[in-house]
Amino acid sequence: MNMGNGDVMKYLKYVLVIIVIGLVVFIGVELFRSKDAENQDNTNTTDNRIENTNTTNNNETGNTTGNTSTDDNTGNQNEIQNGEQLLEQADKTLTARGWAGASNNVIGLKDNILYFYNKESGEFKKIATGIEDIYYNTDDPEEMIAKKGTNAEILDNEQTFLIYE
Image (cartoon, rainbow, N blue to C red; front, side, top):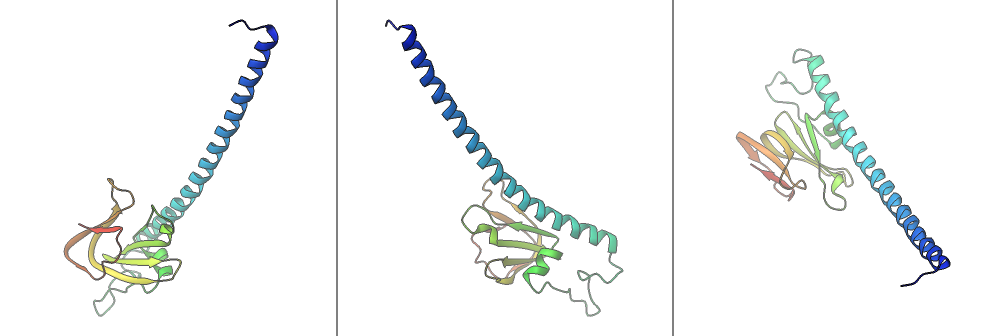
């Protein structure tokens, strides 16, 4: 293959254009990914701030100040009444993930009572009692696991992303 000086310059010019286009596409994709990751981090950070605030409030007030999570005079625990209270007062919350609209579904744990809250529809209900902990399944991060205590009672098992163990 005999290429003259002009042919080599044309070839290099095409290669250079292809490299520049590839770099622009790569940078665009990375910017999109970083923006998406930043949005996901902001959501997780907000959940963590809520969780940390609740832990701090419980530690600061203790059980002697009449905190809403303690027993009242009748021996019954004050239960959370709506989704906003759940987001503010829960000991731990997990947000569903893995499908369109998943982030509207929140599972919250307060005083061993498990609650479900859908932020879009406003649906709120108590779904189990006697739950010790909730966490994401390490094998399938789209699933949540609720660890049952010895006296656990499942009141509602409609959430397919929630597994009781």
